[in-house]
Amino acid sequence: MMMRRQTGLLALLLLVCWLPAQAIITGELIMVRSDKTFPEAMLILQDAIKTQGYTLSRVQRVDIGLTMSGYPTDKYRIVFFGKTEQIHELTKKHPELIPYLPLKIAIFAEADETLLVTSDPAIFMDLYPDPRLHEVFHQWHEDIVNIMKKVQIPD
Amino acid sequence: MFYPHRKPALFLLLFLTSLPCLADKGEQLYTDNCAICHGHEGTGGVGIPLGLESFLEQASDEYLRRTIRVGRPGRIMPTFYRLADHEIDAIISHIRSWKKTAIPKWDNTRINAEASTGKQLFEKHCVSCHGENGRGGKGTGMMFSRPRDLPITPPALNNQGFLNSASDQMLKNIITHGRKETPMPAASEFNLNETDINNLVSYIRSFQKTMVSGRPMLEEPPVMVYTSPYSFSETIENIKRAAVGMNFRLIRDQALDYGFVPEEQESKTHTMVYFCNFNFLYQALAVDPRVGMFLPCRITVIEQNGQVQAMSINPKRLSQLFNNNELDEACDKMHDTYSTILEEATL
Image 1 (cartoon, rainbow over the protein chains, first blue to last red):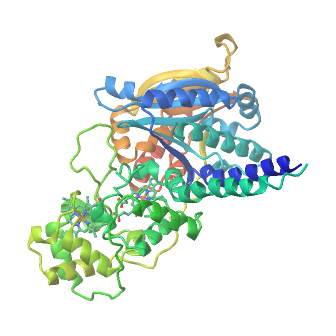
Image 2: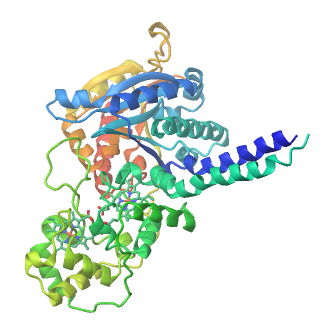
């Protein structure tokens, strides 16, 4: 009995401690700074996307394109991801969402650290008032915060 | 089962776990809300440094509190209206923990000097860094290893967020002493006396208006959609031709579900045409390193229910998330370019 209550209290306390950690939303963008180098952060990001149940469909190497055109730059990539069935279904039912699919996160190096930015899917609620979509947007929001959090947290 | 002797242990445990939790609150809030732009230790980046002694000696708690609350409209620094007062105070304590400096308190005595003389001084000594009418330096402190003129972007001084946070006495102190370890020089370097400094303060203060909260949001639709009278493949070809005509380089076209299904199962009715203008992109990255959210340029052509449509995001709508006037300008341009391509391709 007591043991269970103790665990319950502890869980509550831990929850309270962790709550502020959820708030990584600045305005309508979700942004994170990781003290990991770019390659490390990239690996964690890709892993986190998969663990969250998404398919990583492509990585756009913006920096390579720039460098090849004669514009020197640090590492800059865009990671595209989504859920196959969801993409097919949304495409069919809500073609107005297509330009925003698949979802994406921009990841780039700043010296030894790495920055990640994406728009908060919660903004879609204003853009697309259809209440049936809001559950989807809410889920995306939760998932993306989780994904970003994994890259942010230091060892 | 009841073990009374366990209770003190429980409370001790609760107490101990809650200690770091409270102490870390400011740090955690800073990490989540500020570190992306100002760096983990306030070294700066997209935002200017917050950890320098020269800054902390000049910034009163009141100034920090207001700055965090109202942000700098149009200058990237967001408003943090969601944060509670105690959270803002926790962030400030964390920022103060980096350096032991005296915490200044500025009284609100106004300085009523000659703004017109101040304007002349400003144009002589300050405009090269702070820009015409104090609108601030261009770009951010993050340049992706490119060479740059100044290590720190001079802030906008005509910004309502700044003017509503800084008192005249604080302005006077900044101009008098400058900020060590930043490009901001002290008045002595320009041989300015106290009257000159007061005139400069009055000039900067003359930019202040009644502050309207936030930036005006434009009613912009999230996407731009054009119906095409041409076939699906003709429309794609038209898009490519129009993009090349607008100085873009075609990158690739891909099914919308590329990477999600095996190639042979990919959609034949949803194609993304990717293109890029690397010169424009290079400049856009200097304006705001977060522009990745617009990349790469893309128009999607779909055929659904016998109708062909070409569509793209609306850069004007997306730009509103970034609180960056300079980026708004680039996105206006991008919006017009997308419209031209879409129009030409579906005419």
